[in-house]
Length: 402
Image (cartoon, rainbow, N blue to C red):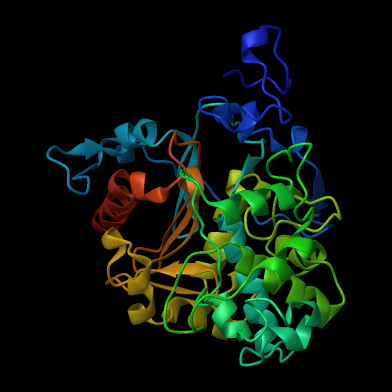
């Protein structure tokens, strides 16, 4: 795939379009993920006039040769080899606030934006946790208190906290590789996929959410379902009177010292897709991760209350997480739209399909931000050569500090 900004290269066989779905087929998406705003409607996430948070450089050549054993693997792999194996488009490693490694591959450049997919969730989960800490949102309140339109839906009697931890019992199947009528209806409603001419279902996020039914009891089980994030975004809008996109700009993106404005895909009503559609520069994802590692401080400024960061790091119910069936993630939990490992380094992550990640290791004082375009959307295919690679780099940096 070319790194050109053209949507339709001269070769007809290489044309990438939203209308025919070719933008979301492999290998075309190796280009699409780095040119999303040329394919989909987006709105700006301005950085404002805040000073840019300078990340000093101390790049190291030794990281490429760090080796690790892939999960269920039979032979060691190097860090450099893992980048190709995971279709990495760009990766940054910060150690003690310094850029020690930065690479761009595929169609991405250092000044380009890339689709973050579900890493987006963690930005909005952090915003929601901030509003809870300020008393503007009550975690124990039912969703319908803030959004009466959802009273008769599967979300209506769930608490805000249950939505944030994805322990809602809703009739929705999140499936990226198989048939799921609810997932297809959701993608048509958001506009992620082009609606067929005869489509008669919901045509926006706020039309879709009230149609989601209930299935089971809220609370005991974690199940990963993106519409939960859209509900939280709606709650935040009602609690503050501001668009979730404006909140992201004013409360996080500008204050953390992002080097460039970002954008986010919107539906036909210009409602942001808060669960999946932030597009940004890679180093700005790394800045967000570094701010979280530093207890909410960015370039000396307290952007997120330390208590909010501490709450996210503590995670949630590991017992509820077991219901997810993620065998390789044993002992993890999910809290405020963050993945918490509960390992000996206190590592926690923002994760997105096709390999997007912000990996925060407080003990190693390390943050890894990665954009990727893996041929499989599910991280279960990527984790065997990603999770042990991240830990190997953390251990190497601790053992070989600059």
